[in-house]
Each structure stands twice: as structure tokens, then as C-alpha cells.
Image (cartoon, rainbow over all chains, first blue to last red; front, side, top):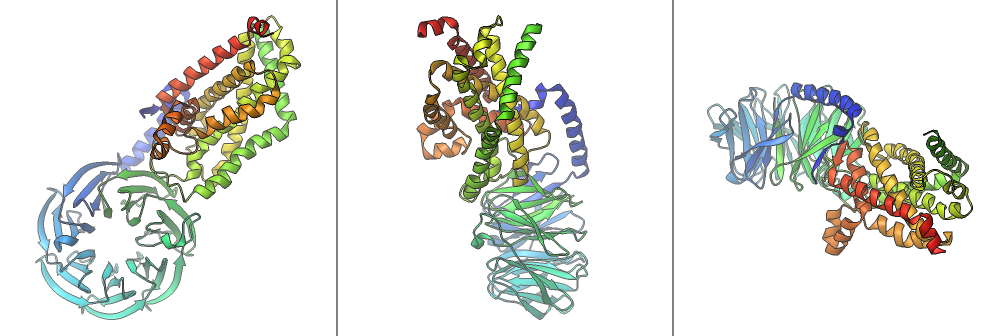
Length: 332
Length: 261
């Protein structure tokens, strides 16, 4: 149905709303950025303008794009093109694929070392983590890990590369100097994603089938807390944590709960679940904008991206993108 | 002019007195939609996934979806009950005296409609205040922009009630009105389910809902609560208000009453 604002007919309200809209416009200008979303089933990337919250461009890439990450200077985008068995590099100025990296088979998730050079790639089919030098595009090392490696993260100090294996149910600790697997931490079933706190002292690991998130002390590599979730009106089997994002101020952890269609808001200090935010269907991965005032979630089955206002802890909008959106990053 | 104001004040005052003297009626008017919100909607929360539809910008819970329909439910029951009270008032109550006053009959009936609408608004806002902690959180300005929509819908439903009351002779017929007017109007509308969902179930049910003025009243309130204007809904609701009012005034004309006798 065609709609216009009711305020057009109410002069007093128009005045009030006018000032509100102006304030919104100003605040939007301050967070102007572009979100890049990989669409797993369309073999494309959707670009969302974060001012207008509209898809402005759709770019074709390799087959089944999943994990995506930005180079430190934001000039390049690395794309796990899983069914093309490669990691593609896109020049974000020209929007062209400029190179492909020897990623090993079926790359799904990866993490860039703080040195902006080494890329740690999980090869799901080969039970390997492949380390690729993005400078000379060579394979530096291949490390055997558990069955079906998935989640990847590198600690902020660059000392640890951490991988999760979905079938072995472990978090694997790789020393980035020697590229040796030095320790494993057993977590609940099907660990999907890992995320370091900003100070690098805590690692959050989600277990999709177990329905839990393990909070691991990095120094001892032991679980210090385990989170579980309960959403009113949602069957417990549907609560399947995947993506985890932490605010830099250490206040909140956001956990994407997959087919439960909610994002859990957790107090990152007390580990208390504060709220559940309703988003689209099968929410998996998330990304903050630069000032962390907004969090974007990819909702695979409903094919959209939900925008969460971090201060208000409210979902403000859901934007249609391609089919099965998977990864998301924000270009400041 | 003074006599018009005096007449309006008298009718409004009487409705207000009736409202405060019948606290149980106020409570029952609130309990009914709250039961729907807290019990019915909670049960359907998981069963009915509400996709993104205008005016909503994102996914919503079932509670959020049915809240505007429940606001209209309050107006519907109130409009019908108060207007049907005219059956009694016309024969024995204050309206009998008023209808004999020198003031034009249409003016008196419109005053009655306005008085019913104003009293109903208090109940709607009380409901919205209770619904907020349950997660029905429209934007703050929405509480203001929904006001004109609520007034129009209250007038429409009040006028329909007056129209019906002009045609029935006994108050006992209220049960019939419940079964043949209130329930069909409420259930065959977008109050409980979006019309696209209704269309998935049955094409003819969808068209029935679309032909129901109450559907458009609900959509008008739904959009206004989120600071948007649904022009087709406004046009249909305003048109129906005018038509029902004219028919109700005609129904209360002394000539018609004489013919009926």
C-alpha cells in the first residue's frame, strides 16, 4: 500500500518530527559507511549504504561466497569462494577481482593476522588450516586440525591462531610463530565461530548443536564460563549459536542464535543474558559499523540483513539482499 | 451557539458520568484486549512468524502485530455497546428528553458519537500503556499521530452502532448484534492476521476481509501508530463514517419513527 507520513497533515507534529528527522540525518552522516554482504546462493556481494540503508550495488564473485574480511587499510576485500576452492581478492576502488589465493579446498572462514599479511584459512573438507601469505600469494604452512574445521580467529597480539572443528568439537590453538598446533580445548557440539575480546584475554566459542557459548581464558586455555539460552516461544532445539561479536568497550556480547531467529545480548562482564532481539530467519554472522553504534546481522533463510541499534538494543530495520546472505563486513 | 455547546456538554457529561459509574465496564473493556494480547498472542507467538510488512521496518512479534487490531476492538465494543444503549435511552433515558429539544437531531447524534469516541480513547490509551512493557513499543510520537485515526475509527464504529440501534426495538437483540456484527467484523479483518496470510488460506476469505471496513480501520490505526498515513485506509474509513452517520441520522428521523409505529 502506498504510504506517506501522517505528519504531513499535522503541522505541530511536523515541527516536532522535522527536528527529529534532522537529528537522524545528522547522526546518519556521522556513521556513513558501506556494508558488504556475501550471498552464498547468488554468488554475489550486496553493498548496503548505511545512510539510506538501501542496497546500492550487487557484484558477481566466485562460487558460494561465505567468509569475507577487509585488509587493514580497507582497500582490499578477501572472499572465501568456497565452491571455487579459492580466496579471491577484490580491489574495493575498482570493484574488480584482482587475484586469487591458493586457499586449499572449500575455504569457509578465515582470519587475517594483525600483520595484515598472513591469512589463516579453514579448509572444511581437508581438516586443515592453510596459512597463505597475501603478499607473494604463497602457502606458508598447512596445519592438521580436527574434522570439519570452521571458525577462525587470530588474537589481537597476533600470537594465537584459533580454529574450531565442527565434528571433533574442539578449539585448536596454533602458535603463529611456529605454526604448530599446541593445544586443544574441548567444547560443546559443533563449534562454529570464535571471537577474541579486544584485550585478547578471553575467547568466546559458539557451539551450534550444543546450544552454548564457551568463554575461554586464553592464558590457561580453559573454559571459565558457559552460556546457554532460552527464548520464550522458541523450541530449545532451534537455539543454535553461531556468530559472536563483542563491543570494544567490553560491555556487550552479541550471539547470533541461528534458526531461533534472535540475537542474544549478553553482559560481557557478568555473562548474564540481557535480552533477545528478533531478527530474520537463520541468523549467522554479524558485523559492527565503525563506531559500533550499529550491528548488522545476516539472516540466511529470509535473505536479509537486520540492523540493530546498539545503544537502544532495538532492531531498527531489515534490508533485503541476495539469497542466503552469509558474511558481512563494514567499510568505514 | 451557546445552546449547542450546552447540548454537547450535557451529552459528554452524561457519557462521562456513565463511564465513571460503571467501573466494571471500563475494566472489562480493558481485560478483553489484554487477554488477547497476553494469552492468545503468547500462544501464537511461535506459530505465526510475521514477515516484514508495511508499516513495520523489520520483523515483529505477534503481540506487536495484533496491538492495533486490539485498539480497534476496544473501539468496536465500546461503539456498539454505547450506541446500542440508545435503544434504552431513546425510550426512557436522557436521550428521550434531548431528542425533543430544539437542537437539530443530527447535531445531537453527532454529539453522542463524539462523546462515545472521547470516552473510548481513554480506554485505548490505557491499553497501549499496559501493552508497552509486553513489547508493544511504537515510537513515542506514534501515540500522538494515532489520535486522529482513533477518533475517526471510533466515530465510524459509533455511527455503525447508532445505525443498528435505529433498526432494533429491544436491547435483548444485543446478543444477535454480537454474533452477526461484532464477531464477523473482528475476525474477518486484518486485526489478527495479515491479509496476505488470509489469502494463502482462502481467496474468498481474503476478499471478504478486504470488503470489511473494520480491516481498513485497523490498517489506518496500525500505520498511524508508526507515524505513517495509509491513504486508501483513510479514504475508506472516512467514507464509511460519513455513510453510516447519514444513515443513522436518517434512521432516527421522527418521520421514520412515526412510520415505524
